[in-house]
Every structure is written in structure tokens, then in C-alpha cells.
Image (cartoon, rainbow, N blue to C red; front, side, top):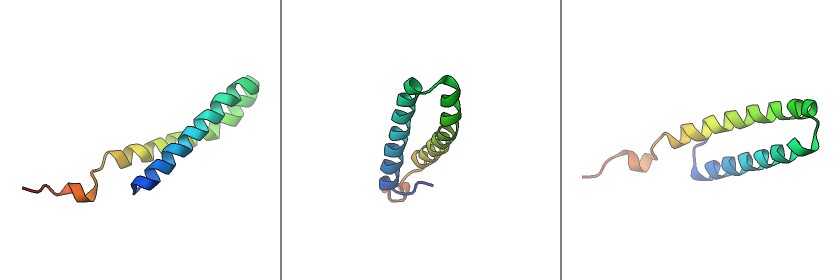
Amino acid sequence: MIETPEQFERAEEAMTQMKRFLLAARSTHTPEAYVALSAPILRELQERERDVLAYLSQLPEASATVKR
């Protein structure tokens, strides 16, 4: 679960690294090996993406109260 801007940045960086790894692996592995290699990484990317979207869908607590 992402709760801070710093955690958000770390999650984004980790996702970028995983995507770059998968892009490189596509050209260096056989199709069968790539499927086996990529499956757990793609699941991890989906989980992190859900966390990122959950974080982005909530307002920061300081902004949650409207000042008039």
C-alpha cells in the first residue's frame, strides 16, 4: 500500500525498471522462456499498478478539508 509521495516515487521507479527488464528479455529469450520469466513480473506490475491507482484516487489529508 502506498501512503506517501516518496513511496509513490519508489513504486513508479520499480515499475519502470521491471518494464525495461521485460523489454530487454523479449529480445533475448525464446518465446517459451519469456512467458515463464515474465508471468510473475507481470503479476507484480499489476499489483503495483493497483496500489498506484489507489493512492492517486485519494486526496491528501491536508487537502481533504476545504477552507472557506
